[in-house]
Length: 243
Image 1 (cartoon, helix red, strand yellow):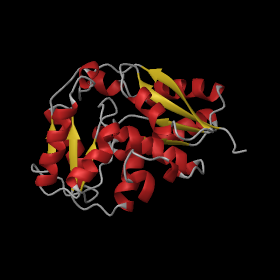
Image 2 (cartoon, helix red, strand yellow):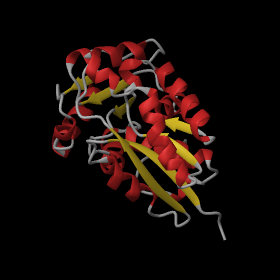
Image 3 (cartoon, one colour):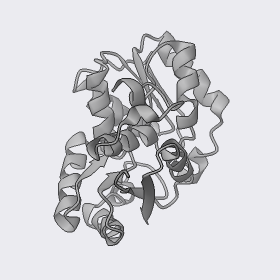
């Protein structure tokens, strides 16, 4: 009988999308369960208050609660490193492991692994964020050679996190199509409060490029690090079959 694997996922307190989507992603693997711990995040901005929400000491406290459940891996299902800097997530993972003894990954670090596997040169970024937040994300991805341009990024200027989950599938599909038309050879729906993961396979078939949703990337990376064959997950995108 396969070993029971417990995944522990750190969740922004105002996020209403990632938990049901993550449950659905792993539902075809009977020996995997998912468990969640929240910490305060209500609005996304570059203000001191907005950035302070992602203080490592606060996140580590939420991680310690997951450790009570003896999870096998901890994942931060969030994208703050996109605007704060990728090295911030590397340090966060170190802090989580130091506090809990449990290995950790994040949506952004997992996405960046997938970009390498798919040999992406021109990334399309679809986000709900403000202009200045998006500018930081684009800058950070261009610093690692992802060739993001005004033709391959779209953002919706939403601040309040609960409003992000109200963005319709039709809106997201249009934006994904626009960045592919602009030359992207892969697209990321870059925010874990976007209800997008369940549409990835449809968009990949329609537009012909990998679509890497950030709810999906952290789940994929946790599973593979726990030794799970992700090919058992059907209908959630090429990442599970090819990466």
